[in-house]
Image 1: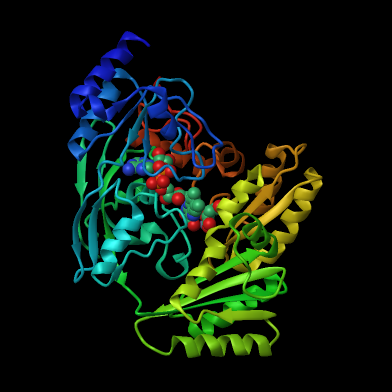
Image 2: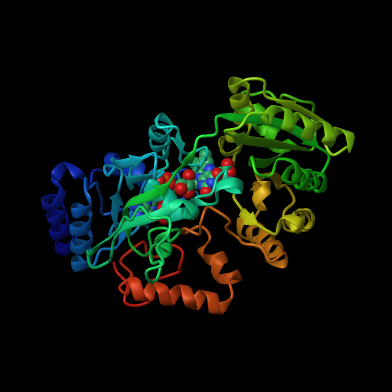
Length: 470
Ligand code: FAD
Ligand code: MLT
Ligand code: ZN
């Protein structure tokens, strides 16, 4: 360890107390590996501040001593954005002690909350006041508010409520020089100048530290109805989606696609059973409303779907408990895939009507570069967002499979990351596939806000644009 690093550690201990600065390998290890265990880093230390003032002082100290900062929330990200490099010189800044819900206003329908608060606890607090924070993902028991803001997380309700960005009314952030910017306004309308907070949403910790947010809440739907259907093909699934939009579009909150192969993995690893006959593809559809009549509307939609031969089989949940077991099939796919073995994640989006042609194109492209790969496809069909994941054979070259899938995405004018972000996992592919003018714009933003490359170097953008830190 250099004298400079030693001095930094002492300064961090002075700022937040010695117990909040972790350096022992066993203490640091859980923070140094990502959820999928694809990336393993080695930070100089983990620092756990308890308030925004401490975050600002830490940032200023790191800037002074030339140590870069890797912010981390719940460490559930799927792109390696929160994992440090292996240089043993980066400071891992964990936000998980900043976990207070500062206020919840059920009339103005806003919540002001610190970055380290767990998404699920904020949702539970809102539910007590008959309000809902409509970000729903299988990792919500660990993911934090700072994490969902910094990744602009999606999830299963984007169809109705939008990505996290659509819910952020205000942010408090700490900039590279340690300045605290207080933009915690509870306003639906605010056109007084540039909307700077948008830059930090989805920035994956590369522009500053999000320390608190004001989020928009929605009324909790009093009634909801959940159905699982099997369909013969994705074209049929899309025809059914168009029909669902026409019949129940204003109450439709989820339209998820799960391949038969993904369901088989869930049966194998999570011990769950499919509720309907085997099919090539399954759909999980949910609608919610404060008004009654939802069940009848869903039954009518399903009856029409069978009549028009859009659906093969289906079930509508008869109770809240049954709805939860239908959702469990969807929510266990990621974990089941992880248990099955080595997998390559692709988080792609294409225009909805291009999904069938993308699937055919990508399948052929993957087969071309890999003999043994198996597909595990599922995702948020209503958003045109598929997790086109590939279970690799032992001889398969991950980089070649990655390129094959992403080239198919580019041919369909899609995105190589719909919701998980670039982190460190997709930086190379972003460089390879993104237009030069768009890359230049991204570098110009980084240069303007974090010129020394203090925040999360090597994530989103390939390297610090100037200078660089240890
Ligand atoms: P982390 O993993 O800790 O960090 C993620 C990124 O944000 C990193 O780049 C980190 O540096 C940065 N960051 C974190 N906190 C801050 C902060 N306060 N200030 C600045 N930067 C910060 N994602 C979806 O979009 N949709 C899904 O449906 C979905 N489902 C998932 C299911 C499972 C089982 C798992 C494991 C993950 C899933 N994810 C999903 C991915 C993940 O949960 C989200 O990306 C989530 O938003 C990450 O939150 P986190 O607190 O764990 O962030
Ligand atoms: C999901 O929709 O379940 C996820 O985003 C997680 C994944 O891609 O595995
Ligand atoms: Zn997803």
